[in-house]
Length: 173
Image 1 (cartoon, rainbow, N blue to C red):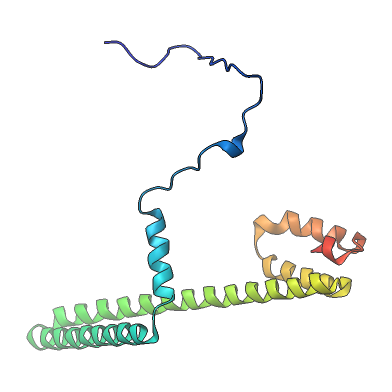
Image 2 (spheres, rainbow, N blue to C red; image 1 turned 90 degrees about the vertical axis):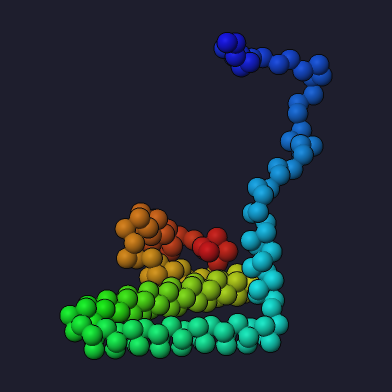
């Protein structure tokens, strides 16, 4: 059986001496379905208020139905077999507690994102105003945000060492 691949390095000689221009290369095709997810997300973000209300109502109805079914299941199981009912109640309590912890973690992530967004807006205003004092305050806020991360410690040390040497707000940012 023969292979179609060369077993040694291959040299292709071009006829012209001009270097290849990468801007003339055709665009890389997107993977199938990759852009579809972004289109669906965009359509959902622009959904009408009526569609959002319908989705909310069906979500609330589903949650209510699930809660009632779970309550009936656990109450019936407690009446028939107290040990199994207690186990089901304990598992339900664990699931609800873990769901609440997950929701709290996501809420804290949104708070961090809003803090970063506030820093971004302040940085834009400081850059527009070219205010060195405000730039120093902003970099101090940014350093405070990342001070508990060990991977950021070397960069924060360099920033702290060079912050007073910079005389331009744009360069400090």
